[in-house]
Structures are given as C-alpha cells and as structure tokens.
Length: 476
Image: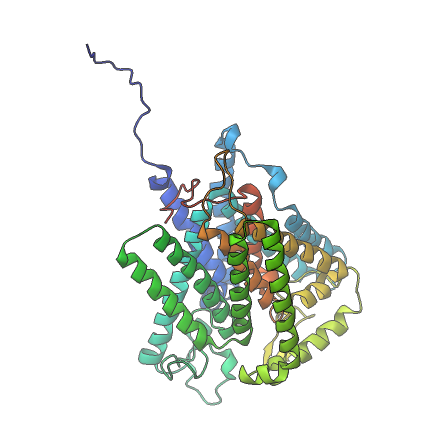
C-alpha cells in the first residue's frame, strides 16, 4: 500500500545549469567581453584612449569579482587544475613584464604588459568558466553583433550622414580634408556590390574587419553544420545561412589581401583535417599527411614564384602596401638588441617619444611592425621569438589532435566527432597567416583567443556531439 512521506526518494527537480539566471548572466557578460575585445577599436574611436583604457580596467575588475568567488566556492571535483594552466603563455607575459628592466620605453612597457596580462586573464576566465559549446556560441554571438553592427553603421553613414566621419563622430566638412586613412567610416558600402572601395565597419579598419569576417565565416559555418547535424528547425538553418552569406559579402568588401590568403589556408587546413578524420588506420593517415604536405609545398612554391602577379591581382603590388619599408626600419632597430630586445610594447604607444613620428604612414604614426614575429624580435629579441613560437606551436599541436582524433570519454569506444572541434584549429591558422602582415595575433584579442584555446585544450581535451559538458545555452 502506497504511503505519503515527506522524505522523497528522488532528487529535487531543478532547472538545468544552462537555464539558471546566474549562468544566463555569465553568458551575457562573456559575450560583452568578447565583443569589446574583438571590436576594441570601436571603443577607441568612440571613447578615445582614456575611455577605452577605463573600459578595459573596469572589465578586468568585473571579471575578478565574478571569477574569484566562483573559485573559492567550488568543490574539490570542480577545482581549477593549476597544473593545466597555459604556462607557456604565462611565461611570455612574465617576459613582457621583466623587459621593463631593460626597456628603451619603460612607461610603454609597463602599460602594455598590464594590458597583455588583462587579456590573458580574460582568456583563461573563458576557458575555466565556459564549456566548448559555450565558448563557440559566445564567439558566434559576439561576431553577429560586429557583422550586423558594421552593416548598420556603414549604411547609416552612407544613407543618413552622407559623408565620411572621423573618430568620436567629428565631421569632415572643412577645408583641407585629412588623409582618408584617418576616417572611421567612409560610407561607401553601397558604391558597388563586390568590387569597389573598401569598407571599414565599426572597427574603422578594413584589414581588421576582413579578419573578423573570416572568423565569422569559420564560426558561423561550424554552427550551421552543428545545426544541420542536430536537426534544428528550418528557420534556424536559414538564419545561420544568412549570417554566413552576410559575413562572406562583407569579407569581400573589406578587400584585405592577407585575409584572402588566410581564407585559402583555412580552407586547406579544414580539408586536411576532414580527410584525416576519415582515415581509420595509421597508414591511411600517413599517406594523407604525405599527399597534403606535397600539395602545401607546391602551393608555397607557386606562391613565391608568382608573388608579383598574385600581389597585383590582390591590388597590393606596391611593396605589400608599404610594409617593406616598415619591416626594414623595424629590423634595423631590432638588430641593435637582438637577444632580449628593446622592451615590450604591444601595441606601440604612439605618443611615447620612442614611437612618436618614428614610422609614419599616411600621416599616422604606425603602432605595430605589421609582422608579429618581427614585432616580437624588436620587443623581446630572439628569446621572445622562441617563446612566442612555443606558444603557437603548442596551441596548434593540441588543436590539431583535438580536431582529428575521435573523443574517447569512457570505455564504450570513440564518441561521434563534433564540428566544434574544428574551431580552435581553423582560428589559430587564420591568426598565424594574419601574423605574416599584422601583429594582432600577439596582442589584444588575438592573444586572448590563443590563451583561451591553449587553456581550454588542457582543461577539456575532448568535445562530443552534442557537448556533454554544455552548461550554458543550447549545445546545438
């Protein structure tokens, strides 16, 4: 005979972790950090240097206020595994701070090393607090804000303002307009459909916008694949497809030669990873590696032999848009202190006497070497280049096997591959390609993403489909 009791035998019914208000707030905060990091120049153009610095400082304090109590309250099974922190990345940060002892620009070194530490902390915060599904979803939503915001901003300037605008919304309707490179947005998005003047988006820089659109293509495409594999509604499939199309169109309109090359590299890496995934034997994988290595060598050889023609087709026939002169000046200065460098400063602080007027392009003081390896050599010498190579080498190594090895979480055998496992690998290769002509991969959001991926690949070296560890948001 059944009897009523006040001692239930089942667990209390409660909402899953991903539906709790605290986790929803954490996701919203993480998205805001990601948007602010990826579109940092939006805040710089909107608030100025002081305002952007205040925002970075405020976000660092807010993250600490969220993260420290979480670390303290955790049970032993969920504690942070300190031995799995991205120590090689932390060595680079420590080297940046140590360089203030011999720096030729100590004030700039202290300032920028603090910024580097802040972005490093945010990357580890993401890796510790979010699952793989959460991280990819966070990047996706942040990039949607940037893609959509850039389109709306460009359209507003083109249709409403009807003339280019300067940072902080200063008008340019005066005698002797400045060099076009000073403009935040030129309002030319509707001048042509594909081939035309380059657009700048909310970030105010065509090269940066092109890179962000490439990241958007990667993440949006993977999320579309997840949706198809997870059999989401047709409405969601169409929505995600439209985001891919919009990002691709703005990628073309940004007209960044480096990101066109990066797209080819990313597509090639994706093909190799997918083929290796299907190879069930060691011999099959070895043959795949040999074939694709030969193709890669042939591709590089063709690229070098036809460099001038390819540069001309991309509209960059003039010394990689002046980068050759910048590299010569940077290498000459870096050679004065080849071992430990001249002191960390990423980015270069343009109002510091050491950089103010040193290299000027289009009446603007340059604030990077436009090559992350040369920039590291200038700042931290050969030692810095070696440490940075270990950072990216370890990241790519872990990301590769994360992408091509089937996850094994129990004794039942390998679990299904997750499309999400391709995201770290493809983004890292996009950053490495960008690093040939830009320094973003070693600072600010580029460094944050690298640190985040290294840490997460150590904290959670496998991801299933659907993600068993998903705690925030839908896994599909």
